[in-house]
View 1 (tube, one colour):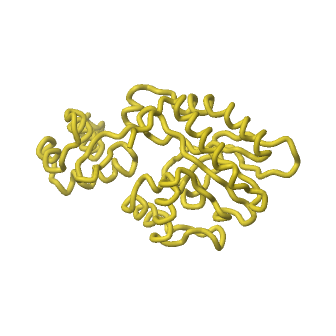
View 2: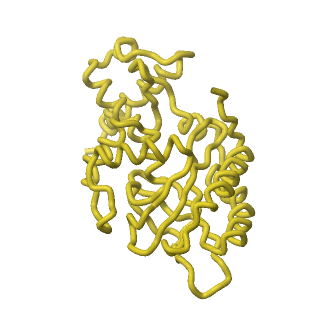
View 3: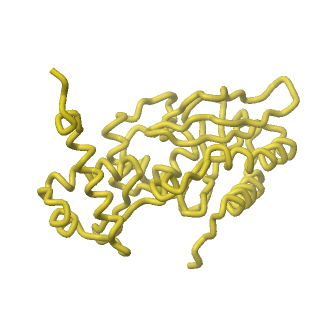
Length: 256
């Protein structure tokens, strides 16, 4: 029997669309109670769907528990070619850092609970850290991944831990919620992050985040090197390059 139009619809998607439409009508963050009333959804149902939308970065929840559309959703709706743009903008800076450090420079982006290597600049010598374009790494074993987790706060990190169970790659991999949350918070606050052999023994990295004009993280920029060659003096030029790339992507940091 041929399904009717109403039978072929997916209820949870319809409800998510109702919630997104409702949020978009408010100029300020809106409460769960108001969204439930607007959409005729039970508060418990609306809460579950909103939680999923937050996990997928389509909705944000502020410190007062109110909801608003995320920068990611706004960016998608404006048809920005973000992936192409940030790679094109980043490559000249990556090549300059490669020549300055003599080490591999990586560009990564997030997909769910992993980062994906989308671009690299490698030094012209035999011995260097090699990251394969398209390869993936869990967030908790990379510098930029820990910073991305830090932006989600304790509850976001808790969700990540529950979903992944924090698989260990080396004896230095963060293996519990408290230590990962503390490290992610520190990395985000200082504006850069180390990977201290958490993914692979003998390899370390320093990473920073890249932001777009909506203040959303679009990528991570990092230098990878044998741990004995990694240098703290790389931090300043790496942070400077990250800020320059973000500025070209339209990011303007709010004043304190």
